[in-house]
Image (cartoon, rainbow, N blue to C red; front, side):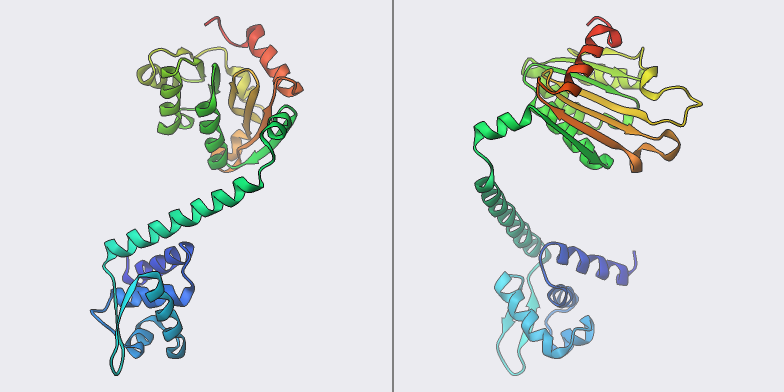
Length: 267
């Protein structure tokens, strides 16, 4: 990776962590110097000299640089490990603060539980769908039924959550469209009921251009996730999903009855 690209990537990352552009550019410039004056920082960072002082002041308050008072003033960046540690702590503090404020806005527990009984939501993108798959497995109390069409959906995180669910006594059935899926689950979670047949209905006919099912997850007989994609377009970029919650939700009831009436083999 070139020096220019490394510098630009570092600046972008610092901005994502909360620094303003000029602050990020000045800090990156100082990491390339033993010490530097405002003019030297300006020359390397391309930040206007009159703006360097404001950026430096904020960086000092953040704990990312030292200032040597003299004529002219000289500046030095803290070590990389110290800078990373400082930024990580500040990020964690902001997340904790956000969590506190968001929790103060949540509805009362009784209202939240009641709302879940009639919810149906849509989600787009494999990453958020994968995250909700992992969360649903982690939250399961009594039963998990998981059907997947490809091994890539069984990430290390999903497998770890299945293992943890098995250890806390949750009944688990996993169906896979390939032998590799079944082998992965059997090796990682020996106590899980696994099968690799009767799942052609997930993908549909090979000649069909209709939507196919990528994953189906039912937990505690009341929380449902169904992912879908168009096979010709590829699952990773096109996956969509619906989420449904609650025993009284019609979508959940229909899917549960279909599963219980023969889509799954006897466990």
